[in-house]
Image 1 (cartoon, one colour):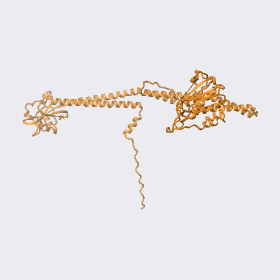
Image 2: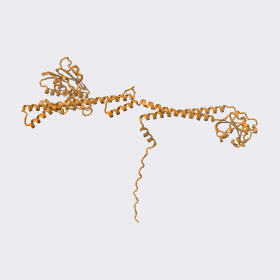
Image 3: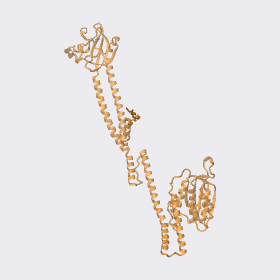
Length: 536
């Protein structure tokens, strides 16, 4: 007989844990809409409040009614012993005593009876009913303590009649046939029970009605309170469906919903403005790119046609054509560089890109470059040391653009004044100046004065200046000369100090390598080559 090994024992797999009732209830509540949750919470709060009030009211009324019955029974005058009390028959139990009660006598005297009375004797034990008794009181085992009472003392307890009717029983000590006996006087509490039952029905009806009214009121309040949220939701869905930014919703009051609506309107307006600026930038860039591209395509087509037809162009014409193409390429290079500069976010940079920059050295290098662009101009420079915290390449590009702008509009042999004192850099030329009605547009992208459209440029230089200065935490203005003379005056204010921060501040001087190369090689390079290198 082969010994078959038993199958390997596999550990029992854990039973998947099912969510308990509390988790299911919580999941159900969270899956409801905000309006449904508000209605549910308001109805639940009102239901709890009404239920607690109804219970408190019912218990207070119960205590008052039973207290009144006990007080009346305790202060009631005990009935006098009936005539022939010594001859009253006694029976072993209250039921037997009531069964042997003469019905005719009980019927004749029942109208005059206010409280039911019976006697309980001992040795031998028995229950005796007066002739007018119509009900018998159930005797409890603890009633024997009444035999130790003194005259004037009594015990009041809850009890019932033999037919089950609830009652309040008063027990006192008396004598029956020269024997000690207990006098039991009872008052029915059935009217109190009926009153409490009616009160409970009334309170329950009021509670249900209050809960329903609370639910209706909660629905109305939720609809009114969430109406701005519904409008906000509709606006967001409209924007998501149509991509039409700029939609706003009305704002009422100054509560949280109004603040949310105001924030949404600000965000929607900002998005609309951003899209409008983006669209305008693309349109303006396309317009500016079209002219050099058209010229380049014309020149290239001319060269190709000359080569295909075997009719070479004269050397002078070809040289001029190539020169024009080079100029157009440089213009395209500058325009693309300006667009890349403006494509950066408007928010200030943070992190390693921000360094301590020597503004006076930047101004000196920019003047050297401007001297290459305007060899016949006179530059008066007066700069003091000033260190700022910002992007070195962006700030140098801004100063270069200001000087290029001054060189472009300066007359032959004119003077350009460059001053740097206490963080205020000024560039003043003696050209035609800027008309007052055009000052508000000078920093707009692609804006060019009608009187200077024949001059080279893309209209992006001053926009780059404003953006770079703003990123460094400063401000720039451009206006007429302060002394009332000809020309324009550009003022750049940058926060900083006359000395660089020490090592304790965790910062050090950092200048970009390409700019230093421009400074050392500017004498050997042409202005165009230096400009192309600066764009890198």
